[in-house]
Image (cartoon, rainbow, N blue to C red; front, side, top):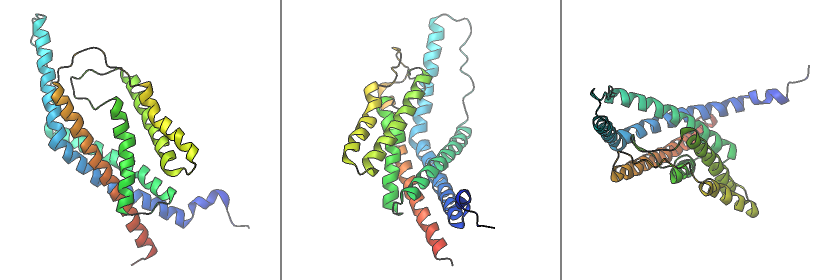
Length: 247
């Protein structure tokens, strides 16, 4: 009976080892970077969110009293800080593992060298794609800030991420010079179209608080992506070395 080839090649030991390396490196990088992001958010971002929620409740109370409501305004039960922290940690770790899977697979499939410097560069690219480029049109928003229609905002965000990712890929990895112009056009296209405009409604959050929130969020995301890329590349290198040189 002839040996099985073709469709079964992907089940070779080398391929299985590659998938295992990607998965393990993603778990390590995702958990650690997600925990770090949570700590940064708890220190810098979360206090601004709590303050903005206070402004929002005060504005709602003022609106209710201004309309002469006979009943006191019911603000609802605030989320406990500990519960909020646990939920944020779980979300950040899941996002970290997901992004690390994407980053680790890209590092392996493109054949880039596996060291902390290369990982940091790819982490920086991830920050540009998923954080910086969308924030240029839709900065992070606090509770109580006026925003555009949700579906339109989500569509613009997704389009910006895809266009920026493809554009960066062309600029950094495609050797043909004439194609690099297409990469530049793709990166600029979503911003030329423009993000959905917010309604002409004055929010309850002071402008300086909104600016501080954008700054804190972007710094936290930058650190997250740099650490994520560095850990993913380092873990891939270490796991590859241990497979090549078993103890």
